[in-house]
Image (cartoon, rainbow, N blue to C red; front, side, top):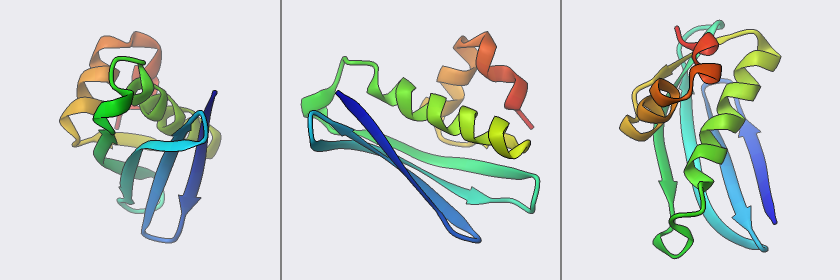
Amino acid sequence: MVEIKHTNNESKGVFELYYDGGKAGLMTYSWAGDDKFIIDHTEVDEAYGGKGLGKDLVKAGVEYAREKNVKVIPLCPFAKKVIAKTPEFQDVLS
């Protein structure tokens, strides 16, 4: 089972992903003003590779951007690639 916990403060945030109770990865971001945030790092533990968990993290970020009506700047190469390959995520691009 996948669970994602989100923590946000005034300047930064993190999505932490848990898989079957163990911490499997995270995605960090930084706010760039009030209307967009920069995804700067996405990481999934090698033990959990190949399960699509990195994409789950990016999806959580995209859904958060939609909820807050803000845009995303994917500086993280992984997040940038996932958004580029997933047309339904591209509405949040800055």
